[in-house]
Length: 126
Image (cartoon, rainbow, N blue to C red; front, side, top):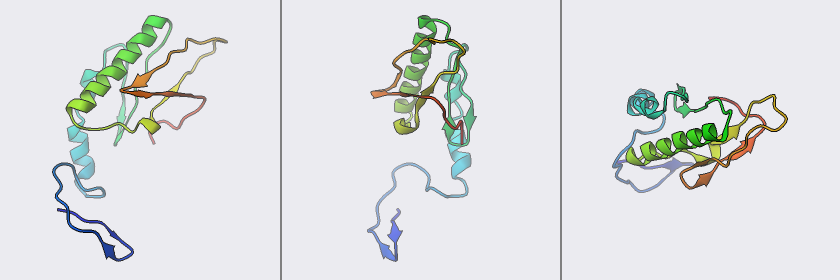
């Protein structure tokens, strides 16, 4: 069971059916063990480095087919998250294009039902 205390006022106790309390000593280790299979669902032509509780995925996009393959990777991630009952924070999921081309390939990526926003810059894994 758990409860929340704010300014000395405690909520009622509530049962915890899954998860690890935030800030616990074992939390980071258990989370890493839990998501350990995540890289296995990423196709070989994409990459998905993990850092603590952050993940990113990327691939070289030289054609519309490459963009569709990246979308398939995002679909695999959505399936994995639904299977494992873990939710990605869609507000932190962005699309960053790095290119020297005047008109790089654009694509409307989505993660589940969330459209991903294109950005000009982003802090990576941190």
